Image (cartoon, rainbow, N blue to C red; front, side):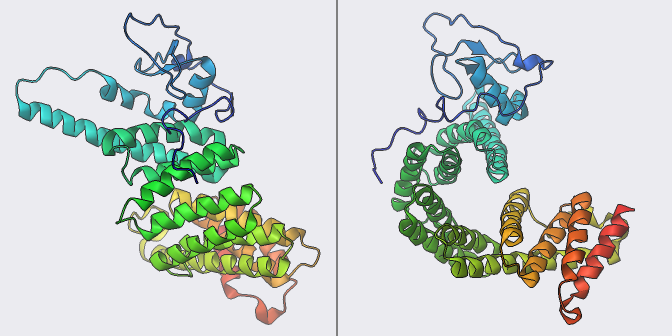
Length: 390
């Protein structure tokens, strides 16, 4: 890794890393109207995404600028629609204050607003990442990076999660050089910080593992993914869902190397981890339903998966199911386990239509097992899904 990486602020978006249009922009949306600018003398307006000279203004907030409609559309589809009005107080000149106390209060409010926007933009970027919409990640993460630098500074540890999201998105886009630059920034920030958590170190090594895997350097990738598992285990335990991602990516590498026994063992471990976790959540939901009646899904105190965990679980379990289903020699018990986990996941996320569809496949798969190997939990889950569908 080279310590002299490109300045992340000036390399957030390139023609290849920002999609021209991942989805159709609503033509009836007034905020997407083109508003050509004539820059005031002495004022340099720059594009929100690439920092090039800007010639287009967002008519909604009137404080955001773009070099062309392509970048305006990319930003809108990714994040700007959600934060358009929230940007106005951050980019409006601060009024004159009669006292230092008033000014300090205003500055404090601005910092809180910026932290709130950091949460929104990072949440959206991570959601796009798990959905595989790598192009949509870039604008949301770009906003987050700019805000984190503004609030915490250029050398803060808070920058690392944003660097990692940007790196993973660029790996997905095939922009490996840019991904390596972000990982270089993250790596040196972690090295210079003594109080970095095991969770952050785990995520850093996972992204490094993904980078080297994309480059075809499998041994180096496995080394970093082993470090990912080590730090995740240290923080959450070896059987945690937070550790399972490292196992999953290692399994993918062994699968690509045609080392099927090792890959199969790791896929089984990942499935078991998620199956145990999801079953525990289903059991908690069922107990809650017996106590509180039909509103049990809305209990704010009930433990559940967050959006990123839902997306990660769906990504991992769907991939393992595809591998199990396409195998030349199918193992019925392993297929039932991953189908059961997927059915529970759909049930917990209230996607009851998909839960019912997965449940039907699950019942068919259980017919291939000896009667003594068929779990009563499966029958109970199918019954619950059918009841909820009525």
